[in-house]
Image (cartoon, rainbow, N blue to C red; front, side, top):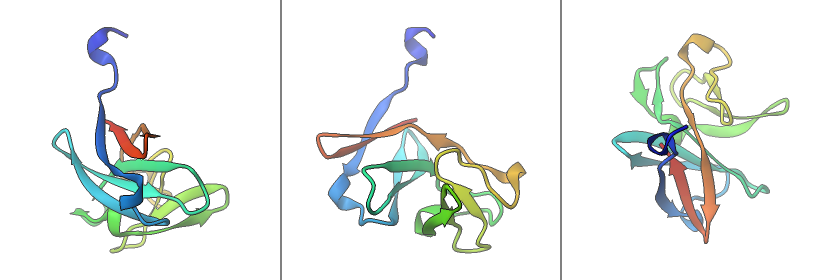
Length: 113
């Protein structure tokens, strides 16, 4: 990996700006990214905000939950489930989305796009 391939960490918001078990949408490096905070965990997740099944930018408004061991968001239009760690669409894998590295640093959520 050369220097230009290193992830570009970009600040999105304060962790306090995201209510537990909800998502927010942020424009990061010209991409709409859905960022989720899960209640009871110190984890945040980031995936594309665009739902390819519905052809709409809505994933940040989906319902967060679990299916087995997977933490998922259900798209608000057709209710397809997207794994928040991998971006895989469980009902239509061909319509999976990109998952981005995300971390919290000094209460600031950073996403690498």
